[in-house]
Image 1 (cartoon, rainbow over the protein chains, first blue to last red):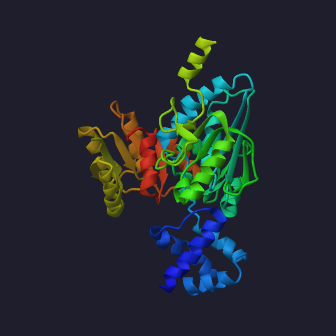
Image 2: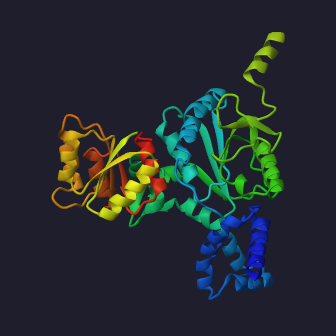
Length: 285
Length: 120
């Protein structure tokens, strides 16, 4: 019972800071994640830890615990088939729609340790000629300071670097440094990393043509998920595209988005005019 | 069902890789060194070969060179090795490897590499 209370306190702390909910089947993972922190601070068990946190929830220890409890699981080119659809036909469609402004803004909104943002940068670099003279911004944000530190450094362990990344791209875009691999500066400079919590109002970063928000909504409670979808809606261009994780959907979650009429598995704003309605409008004018 | 040949002198590694691949519905064969793998490829046409580097009798690199020199060598080759230096990786790609996995690896890493080479 005492341990259950401890998990409840940790869950409340995590939800307050990030909006994420700690479901019971993640308890074992949380205990694993917190063990190094407890060892480092000579804290014998999880009940003692929460007792200390009760006394000072703004401490560095609380921040460390929150960081450890966030699920930073990610990999390069995650969900390969969908990612290929994004960087193939969807990028092509955006290139056509933005051919006047030649400006493209992409937001990796729960970027974790950066693999998603680097995958975007590599995909664009692979088609450098297509994007010549374009102003492309990749914004990558996360709530975790430590994850962002790694993302900014572009430094990955042997285990991390080979998860999803083709070996030819690894050799082309990363340099080996001992047991780690570091993103080449030409790649890093394509991405702006920033700490950002989309559930905290008042920090608007402008509109994006493509937003990736993968495997984040699934950890939020209904109320926070609705809020996140509101924020994503406000940040997406009227004809923009939203990409969620393979196990996530907007169906039944919000009226603001619907499944993309063009790209299966992707989402668009509900009030985006469809090709048919544009044609009908033009015909009646 | 696609055919995968695991070439590794470690019985444990072969067993682990077999388990992972069978859950992905591969038909799995095994060889304990490069020579045995070449003999297997004379009579069979695997779709993908998971290849260790350091093995007795014939190394993974010697196998790869001999295999790629043969007329019917269409299998995708994924090196799975503890050799993690850039020199080894570059040499493997130059010799005709399609992918490279540094041990230790997990199911997700192997699955992604198999997707990259078009075997799943």
